[in-house]
Length: 368
Ligand code: ACO
Image (tube, rainbow, N blue to C red; front, side, top):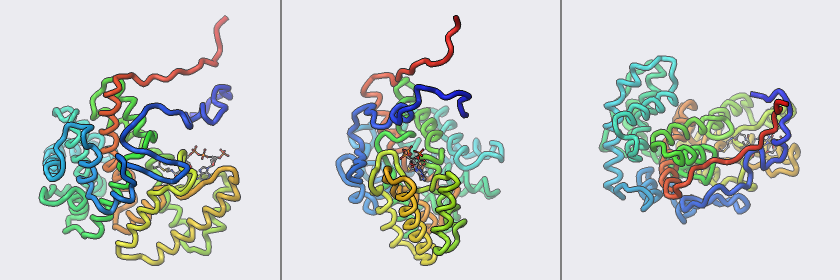
């Protein structure tokens, strides 16, 4: 919605988007925008992604914050959560065929919450791979595939999507991705989760609300459009011209820029490294690199005062495509990983015991 009149309050960058406002202290993650570093519970993301599975990373991340088992016991609980989710699938099957994967995931969480899982982070997070796979298959007119509790979440998600034994390299790439995006300071969806938690609402409500914030193209909705851009550009030689025209038309280039990072998003490199472990599509990689180079050069000319660099979404798109995932699954998969972060933040927010309730300044008309 556009305001019908210029609002004098929203003139400074800070007022517009809370830039630079410290809303709380956290022990969960640190985003060092100037240094281009991301630290999760004390460890740089590069030390975790590509080394831990999603379940192992959740165990490490939740640590003493949430009352859940650790290590192998937590992995087993994640598998049980998939069985719990499978029992809720009739709710998804009864829903309108118009609902997409993301909406079906939210519906699945609501169904589980009403069955008593509203405060169980393992069920809430562990069910999402089942809802993602079943939701996607249903949106394609296909029957859902039941989980195999002997696999880990990434392997089983691939199996439930494709009905085939999961490819080990693709599953490892999904694990790498999920760990890379597990948590990231006070991004919009995490802040949303904390606002909801601060009202005393249940954890499921915080996760479902955060999914709403994540969906937008300025946050978690960008990677699909990154591939749309690569498709539109088609060949490396067309990159420069296409990008110049897009910027001239006032478009934002998906996969570039970040509110906090003033240098390259470290997650982009972690994911680019993951590409090397997947069967290569040399043509696509060449195109991605040419577009990245052309975009960085054009953005530097277009916004010389604002360092706009590659963000996580760019190589998310390229890597997940190489892992064989449909682009409509990128944002749903983001929610699977980030839900672990959201649940940690819900616990941390509750520990503060404080309602988040900022002020606003009324600048509208006053009756005489
Ligand atoms: N392409 C073109 N111009 C851009 C881009 C971009 N990708 N990013 C920022 N700009 C421009 C803005 O339009 C703005 O111009 P203006 O001053 O003339 O209005 C200027 O650069 C300054 O922008 P910022 O203040 O740095 O941007 P902001 O912090 O508001 O937004 C955001 C950050 C939303 C990520 C932005 O860079 C963007 O829209 N990127 C494209 C979408 C994207 O990649 N989203 C995923 C983000 S990563 C994540 O959330 C997981």
